[in-house]
Length: 133
Length: 157
Image (cartoon, rainbow over all chains, first blue to last red; front, top):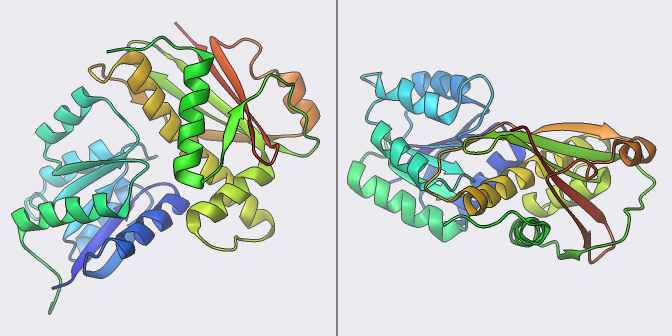
């Protein structure tokens, strides 16, 4: 089973790095979509099946937090798991984000095995997969 | 548990991030920075228990080298390479800020990190701007290839 992923980060270089790490992680990936902020992410989510969203917190136009809030309020998107990929280390803020519905948090800089473990955990609890769609 | 903000802490965290992200090895430097080409300065605002700005300046070509290492390729060429390098240094600063604020303010604190901005200056402009002159905390590093990197934190409260 392969999974469609969406990487949301305002840095093209960071999106490239995340895609590379995902490809090294052993996760069976279908298509990796990209968005440079929350608004673009909402657009992609509206037209593509996405199994997991990886989102930065700090982005112009629509931040990662606003993206999570927007998805939580949408019946079709509320169940799509969101993993925050950020350099923030505030545990209090992470607890607040979990309360808003994020499934996991990966701290930058990251290693392929972190992505593998987080994606495996998220998908195990969520199911899904783009294979055969 | 919050740590005291010191130049040593700033230098140590920046050095660790550069090594982990871009395999760049650095050490603290006491010498004045001397580089005649264009510099890029990236900076971001932070707020929470303390408010201010964190800035990092380095030769612009250094950013392009860092970007190539991060991307794992031979690098873009020309203006595209420099733009990608600026992007890389913005990300490096973002990671340094996250780690430093966690140490300085403590992980129980809630703080906001702004989106990194950049400006490109000539060597003369960089020198006259005096990045470290009015800083609450400042540090300088030099890479194993003798590239200077300057860091400064200014407080607005």
